[in-house]
Every structure is written in structure tokens, then in C-alpha cells.
Picture (cartoon, helix red, strand yellow):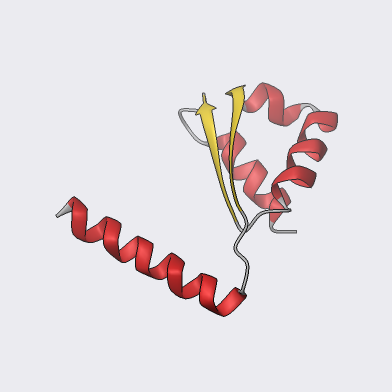
Length: 79
């Protein structure tokens, strides 16, 4: 079951790559990313500036059980 989902995801990415020509993917380890870091105006501007360069980004080490900081980050990225 997991294999089928993974294959579907990979096929979707391949199709997107064919359409876009270039797909920028990144992974970042933002040490203990949470509300404290996202409430820091300097850091949040920096995160948005860097992450907006990519089509797909993965953030590791998120410490935000209610996903408040993640929601704020997504709101800023979607402006």
C-alpha cells in the first residue's frame, strides 16, 4: 500500500517536471523551528526569502505540536 502511494507521488513529480522544465527541491534543517523562531521578524523574513526560491521544500526539526508556526510560515510564503 505504501509503495503504491510513493509511486503515485513520484509519477506526479515526474509529470510536473515535464511541464515546468525545472523543479527546484530543497531540504532544510531549521534547528527547533517553532513559534519562537517564526515570531522573530528578522528570521521569518529570511526563511520566506530562502524558501520562496523552491517549488518543493522540506523543513526538518519542526517543534510545533499545533502547527502554528508552520501556518504562519505558509501564510507568509503565499502572499
